[in-house]
Amino acid sequence: MVDETSIFIGASRKPDDSYQRAEELLLRYGNRHGLVTGATGTGKTVSLQILAEGFSNAGVPVFCADIKGDLSGISMMGEAKDFLVKRAEQVKLDPYQFQEFPVIFWDLFGEQGHPIRATISEMGPLLLSRLMNLTEAQEGVMNIAFRIADEEGLLLLDLKDLQALLANIAERADELSARYGNVTKPSVGAIQRTLLVLESQGAANFFGEPALRIADIMRTTRDGRGAISVLAADKLMMNPRLYATFLLWLMSELFEELPEVGDLDRPKLVFFFDEAHLLFEDAPKVLIDRVEQVVRLIRSKGVGVYFVTQNPLDIPEKVLAQLGNRVQHALRAYTPREQQAVRSAAETFRPNPDFDCATAITQLATGEALVSMLEDKGVPAMVQRTLIRPPSSRLGPITPEERRKIIAESPVAGQYDEAVDRESAFEMLQKKAKEAQDAEAQAQQQNSGGSRWTIPGFDDVLGTGNRRSSNRQTVAEAAIKSVVRSVGSSVGRAIVRGILGSLARGR
Image 1 (cartoon, rainbow, N blue to C red):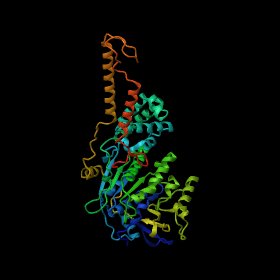
Image 2 (image 1 turned 45 degrees about the vertical axis):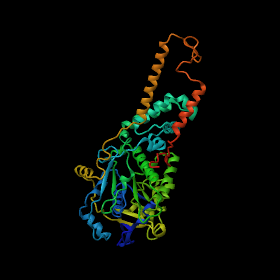
Image 3 (image 1 turned 45 degrees about the horizontal axis):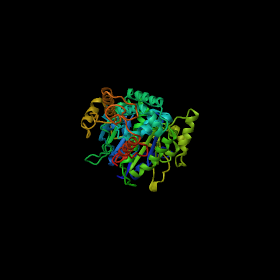
Image 4 (image 1 turned 135 degrees about the vertical axis):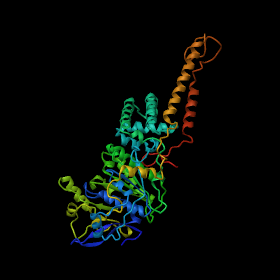
């Protein structure tokens, strides 16, 4: 029915509802991205599950988010339930074999999977500003903070590093304003308050070390299957902006780290972005433009990005145009906006003369979808009304005991469990502040201990000869020291930041 070069999606139907043909996704076009849409309860999660199963069996690692916990069942063997067996017969899936898949569970909070962390430096000023919903002026201060950290060799690893740097910037506001433009204490204070909110929402668990290694989400098993990384996102969805920012950071990390490979016979990794509307809601134009750029260019790195959302209108047109493989589940059309969404979704497909696409979208049953995959030469296939195949793994969530067992036996067990807090900006700035205090105390002690008196800025007029006070320096000396500091802070410490402003590791 299908070969090793494709993933079986389901079976399309003729106008009389009889079997027509097998619908499949060609693996060589798996990196041309995709879209899975549909209203709640129409079968999007199952479509995501069978796509992840297919990619895994083809040796392609998968990363996906589990919003409701249902996707965790992919780690367990499926069961022969009547409605699943019936669907397998309808789509001529013979034999219908059950299978468990190699899964690695991840969780930003470290509760339902291995902890995922990223450093502040890797996140970059653009994504942090998006996460914190900063104003334009506050975003400017954030960019200055990262510039100073780069120039002065201050490692930004966790939230306390950024907080310490911002406090230092507030103290030096006048000096920095002369160099970089207006740096106001109120802007710094507003950023600090936002950081406190993030900290209370659990973001402190995400920022730090050891940071996630991209290689750990691109694993394959000894039998050649791709590992499926499942991000537990039910708690994470309480902070949707953190969820969207994290996935965007991960996508940008993939873009920065992976080499150019061109078109392969199958992707190197497939990335599913569930609840994709969260990425674009209230996003500034510069961010949307850069997301579109990443989506367009990451294909040549061998990565396929699949957006999963309820409404096709959730995706900007520039991004939507990059998504070649499409699965459209039912949409409800009660309001004018919903009716517009149905028309927009219908217009994106290559028409099929056997049915009206817009009408069909509102009449699709659960587990049924309009499917259009890329055919030979990358041309979209004519849209087909398709029954989606049943999954080989368990349909529904696993138990907490089963999850704990999988986590304990994971190939990355123990690698990310304990946070590491090495010397970084917080400790370095504390050390500098203590050294400055000690130097000031020593200078005051020396000045108060002598019998002579001096006039600030002039040579010694009474006492032991023609000598300046030890804590003064000439204008020339100050200029020389400034140049030395500037050169010393920049030479050998060039920071390369990527397309989304995050730190490009491994360069």
